[in-house]
Image (cartoon, rainbow, N blue to C red; front, side):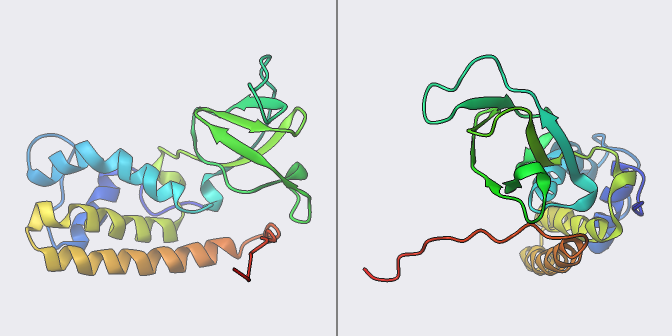
Length: 195
């Protein structure tokens, strides 16, 4: 699905529109807004991407095992892909009804007892704004606006209102995004009820 913006500057200008601020032409040093986006845009983008298993940011791959074995606990280790922002719950062959794969992320490696190749589903860094889904664009623009509101406008109340709007947009977009396809099974957690 194609998004509604093509560049990071267009994305930033959507955020500035929520603040009723003038648009910028580049992430340069010409204004407070352009400096803020120059310094914070990429970190905010990656954080927002990592918050949910966005369909457009989900990547599937099979990882080869590394030659060395983990020092203890696990039988195999795999190097995380360079563009990996988050690794959600995994199932055998990525099947919705498949057995859950136990794993642990240690630094840039995935430790597990699952033999190679490791079927990995992960949330990747997306740097081409044209790939962003429309609901992601809306929520992310509010998230950016909330992040820069106090610095650019000096108004705490505006920043707080935008944080609330960003949270609502994220919940709505995440809920709709999650309803596409067949969901992975819920994990049964053993919860101790008696103390």
